[in-house]
Length: 43
Image (cartoon, rainbow, N blue to C red; front, side):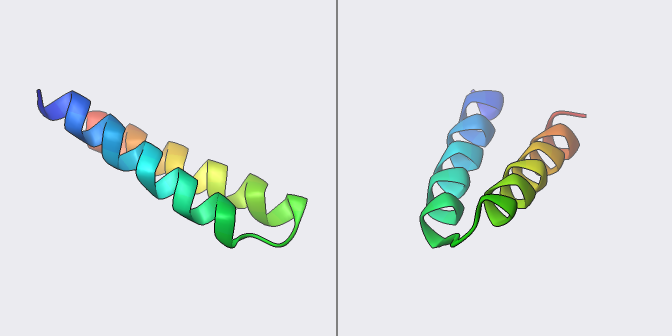
């Protein structure tokens, strides 16, 4: 249950950040940021 909530929150954050990006580089940084946050939450 908690893992599902964390994944849903990460996906929501990902969607919000990708709509706010103006460059491909910015999208890449956002994806890395979400990946790091998800990894910290799971570990």
